[in-house]
Amino acid sequence: MNQARFAIVVDTSTNVNFELAEKYDLELLLYNVQLGDKTYVDLVEITSREFFEQMDQYDQVLSGIPSPAYVSERIETLKEKGYEGALFITTSRQLTGMYELLNLIKRDVTDFQMEIVDDQSVGAVGVLTAIWASHLRNEHMTLDQVAQIIQNKVPDSGVYAVFRTLKYVVKGGRLNKLAGAIGSLLNIQPVLKADVSTGELDIQKRVRGVKRSFQELVKVLEEELDPTRPYYLSLFAGGNDKELAQLKEQLAPYIEASQLYIELDLTPVLGVHGGPKSLGAAYYYLD
Image (cartoon, rainbow, N blue to C red; front, side, top):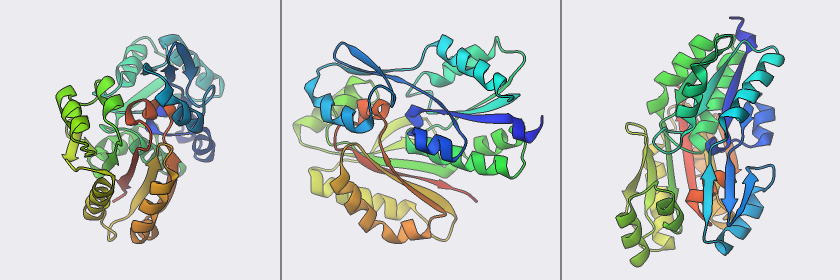
């Protein structure tokens, strides 16, 4: 396959927004989010800021993968654009159904090459993975080559976050309900991580209170980031500009050492589980 004729496809659970998709020539699949009895198309019918301003007003806050028909239509659109295949980068199959949906669709697609990589993580790791894949494509690598490199580099990434309430992540089934109940009762605000060996969201450290959880997040990131190696870095927050600015200040030397740095508002679909005032960072080693 002509290396220029494949697309790189991500979705909003990888924290890619329209601006990044355009900048790095990525195709973006849109999740759905539900507030109360109303459903919105992620980033189109509700912005990140609007979502975090409203979510506390509703008892029911849900997310959903797009329909098979929607994804199939997007694949047809890629064909019409002249693409002969695509690399799909998804959030961990343990946390969302996109990986399974794409593999189900792939069974019936015979005239379009689909390579699907589960990043075994969540959120901004997907952004950084896709940007690296775009770089490799620009280096004239083939779809098969890029897919293999991205698959092999799954262990070279990490994401850590603090959720100011565990209510939403427990409701969504992404964290043990007992752990969530105990955390809420004791005002524990743990540092969470995506374990790339299992693809699951785990508690890295149990910490009580806002200040201590922020300090622990900084400590963990300082331990994980190695400025002697090339890496991409992203900081993100869910309607939490103040702490995002503080985190940026604390990690200034690591930002300076990175090959690429981006700041992100959590997309609404990620906010469904992260909740308001969530905060974190993702990294992706390039060597």
